[in-house]
Image (cartoon, rainbow, N blue to C red):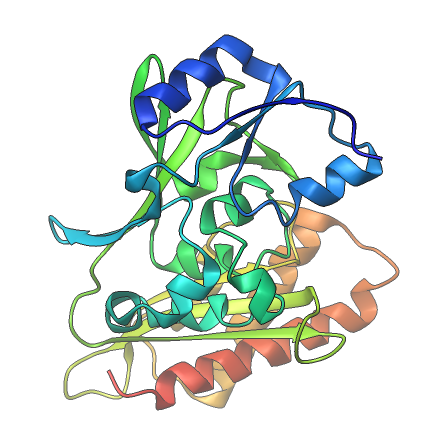
Length: 289
């Protein structure tokens, strides 16, 4: 049984920050509620107030401004998956959003909730990492721009303070020539949490068969999300032949072991994440820039 709580639905970001500042750790932000409602039912979350942010216009927009794409934290996965703007400038993210849950979940769950829940398996986070996304964090004290990786403290933990709200996620519009891919592995193809996922963005050198720039991130294999710099270094400036891809894949699995430690599952997870990465890289190479 869900315990009783107060409820407010502010219509401006200023009002939401005021309410959140007054209640602090006793309050919880709710938008889609796909994770929070489950926690309420299990008794894992016991807020004294729920602050519904879905009526705040700034949090519901997808917009292009200043060479960046901005996504309000209350934009749903379904809206991201179908957005022509994101399909054009961040297709790797719209592809990932289309894999989240069922159609019902995609039409309720929000990008901000997916980030703030801080699940290592969240489908949208590795694409946002390779898009070099930044979060806009607001409170009564003002606005702070935070690189996405710095929002996470650990599995299901963020560095957001009790009076802070993630209002928007933005990423630079990709220069011409970039292409990308997102792949995931789950117990079944749809409506299942990813066991692991990989996102890649790359650009080939003009007129040459070598990778000029590359970004790699993996989901559900490390406690917190980050770019796999070692694997990127192996591929940058090199032709994407099988030997080079194999070395980069081994860097990725080695990174997983360093961050997560050796576990009983490592014996089979390491070769699987390597294979998943090579598949993702090949898909990116085949995509038209």
